[in-house]
Length: 54
Image 1 (cartoon, rainbow, N blue to C red):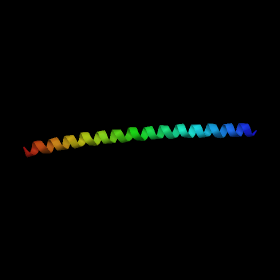
Image 2 (cartoon, helix red, strand yellow):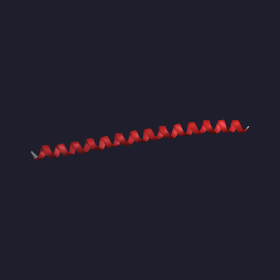
Image 3 (cartoon, helix red, strand yellow):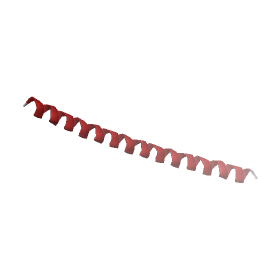
Image 4 (cartoon, rainbow, N blue to C red):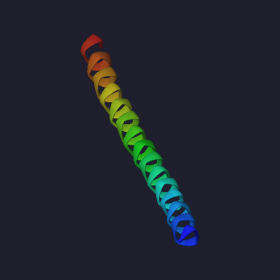
């Protein structure tokens, strides 16, 4: 019975580690998208401002 319990605990640990890795990857992906969007928006605003001052 303890072998089954230990196996379940180990399996649960592995599942938790996999979920954590997925969550980190998702967070990095969202952060990269946010940075990309911010750079594009800043580029557009800078260009519009530069053209307005010209």
